[in-house]
View 1: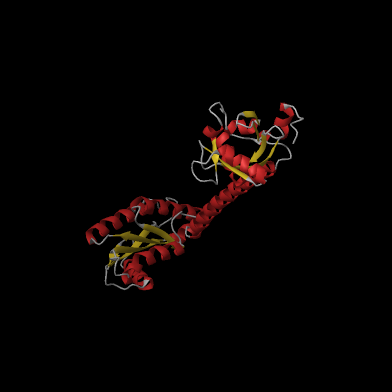
View 2: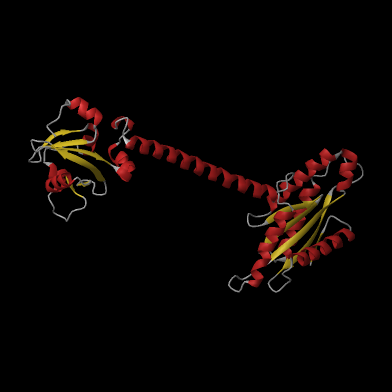
Length: 328
């Protein structure tokens, strides 16, 4: 090489990552992009760069000269950012100076973050441009994929909730009750998880059919929604309230084993539902009959058995005059 024929501005435009060194290592020219990574070369080459594949303490200028003379790829590490490696090749001019053209390789993204580089810092024909665009496209795809996964998870949660919710009252539906009751009973077979007692309440509205017959189904739906509100206001967060069809409701009251407490709660619910009876209903008043069974460890672990007991208690209330509770 007989020496450069390009001016400094043309060299900077074509090789924004170039480094031109004199024989003694003095910096003759540095590309604008590389200058962002090595903003101050006044302390000398060895203060800013070191060989990436030589023994510790090796002279960076000797490593550069050796790679250039042997026509092998050069690897240099930034002293201020040792995890960032520059790679490239160079040629030696007749005057002994060395012109290097460096790049980032797979460390491109790290270099971009470190120095705040943009596409304006690379020559149009630079492979780094393609890698930069590829990285941006990949990041965009990953962002969209993450957003899609979040939406999918939310949709799954909504679908699961809808599958277990009665759309009219907002309470659990029969499927939701089955899951909650199964969870309450499943610990029976698990030695490390002591089962907790609970009360199962089966509630049925008295004279609800007459509401639909006399006042219409809209009035019946409004009444059911109001009953759902009553039940929600009388149970705790740990409890379960479900509408299992028509005018039938079931409650799972965790830890409730006191008969007096269950009697008091049931009477309050019956009174609140009785207060909802439409005044337009001729000759009748809507009330609620309730059957309660207290389940304790050692009882049947079959959900059907527990529901059947509560159902039997309910019909004992119906047969005793309605508007009352029977606790087994």
